Image (cartoon, rainbow, N blue to C red; front, side, top):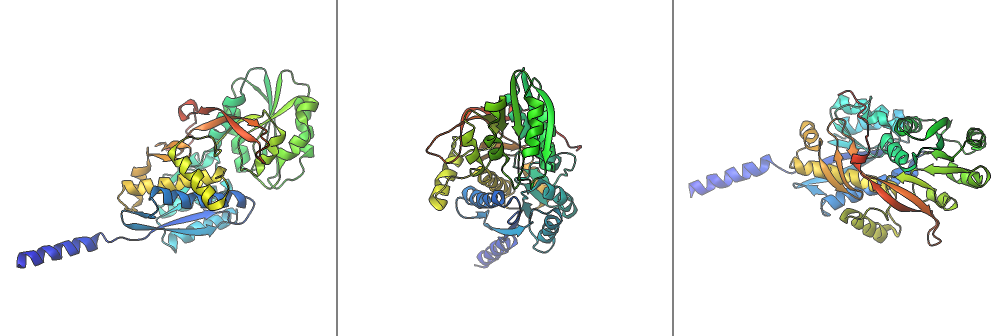
Length: 392
């Protein structure tokens, strides 16, 4: 009898020593500000990712996942302060975000100071996993090089003359820098930049027309944009192809922005995600659940948020729920995980998620209020020579 009591006490002590705890995750994003529409999609996707990967329990190894939302207002100083507060006051185990590349760059040193993981989604500037990177930074979002290289693959043909147009921001400048580096056959003759808050693109259009109107062969303006205005719609309304033979090319965007694509049937480019393109169980679940709950398809940044949520859970599963930063880093380096886009893998050298992109051609389908990107082909990670830009 005595031996039984001692055994029971030992079992009780062991259970107490591995008592479940809350795992706190901060999500810092542009709840308000210029990229609010993108940020709200990420937030929905992150919640869905945590739910999917935990099979609806929101627990890993008996530990409850607690998501703490913080608004960085798309301002670098605010994002820096919010991440500091998350690590210092809220005692979060790791953080996800932000939306804006400038905010992300301001936040990177805070993750290093507190020795806590920052999983970047969806900010895209190359510098985040490049020269400004530190070992606490992982990214599920695509970077500017992945955007640019995949678009270059889609349009980089001999005899083509290209002009680029982008916002004058870290996002825009990094995107054009990467695009320039990826172009091998086409001729790039001009870079045009406008403030991210621009709504009038007339002056930029005139400069672009002057550079391209007399060029021989195929003429393309490659446009990358994230900001308050609608350059896609404005340039489409200028009938550049009919008047000057100038085609527009771009990556994907959120569905409301792609309404302007209806005016550009046949436009080619490469995109990160469109709900109708990837064929896999995770994307099937996302489509079904998003339609069920919101009566709309999931959008560009919803998929990214879901990928981030899945990555967090899969890392925690590998550590058995242990939130020790060094253990999480060891678990995440080289980790592959399933997402709405298919498999992603965190590259060990810079923690950038290697992932597929999609070469598309726009179809004007009257059943949709946006231009529908039809798949030309999947561009797999191994086809894109995405540079390692950090100095590890």
